[in-house]
Length: 295
Image (cartoon, rainbow, N blue to C red; front, top):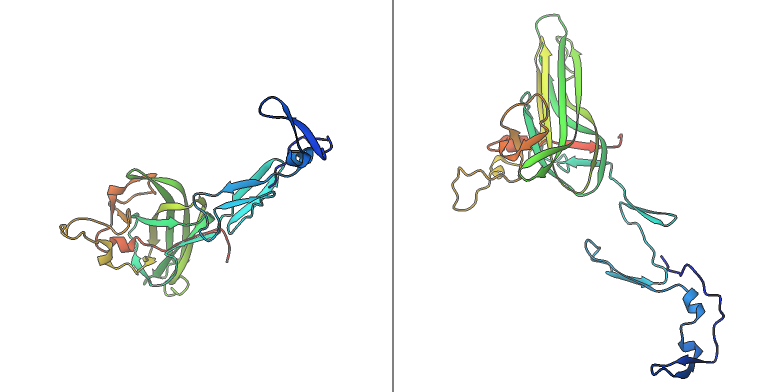
């Protein structure tokens, strides 16, 4: 970016010596090259910028010159429109928690219970759906009738205000399927379930809530949510040295399951109502992906 005066000075530059006023009110002669002349007025001026805040420590904190150039780095897009410089963060199209499939286990999902999980988002992420994973097992039935199963999943992102979680965005999806009395291969195993949702997450910390309810006729359907099993039960309740062993102190704030079941995701959640003792905290560490891409 360079700076020029909006109006040019058309007067030709002086040459040789010029008579000018001095500090005593009289006059003196000076070399014309020592004065600011019209060509200097019309030229590009030097700029000097100092960068503070969240800057790259491997680069300089200052920049100067007659034409400073703005360059977009990873995840940043720049553009110009008349007298406006546009800065736009390019949202990522995928966010998952835990970061990898390593050490994934599963646990029986309690009908209508609300699991709450603490996550941190390090980039701006845009997503149109959330994918969650359940291990499904359909039982057989002695009668000749067809078995049916229904599943409703609610999923939402929350932000913290004081001691209360408030819903930022949410979505829900309903699934149903049938299987024959003596054939369960079509439904048994790990299955992906997608919840439509328009989410735009900025950098920061979030809490995610998930609720599932199932129904079945004739033969029952078992549902186990996949979660990150790398969190041992002991690690979920670390104690301060010298404190009573009954003192509740969770590794992550707000990681657990609501003490009461719900017919929907609550709009607000009091942090005190989230239980993470025993194995509950580990079971709440469910695996999910916020996606805006099809793979």
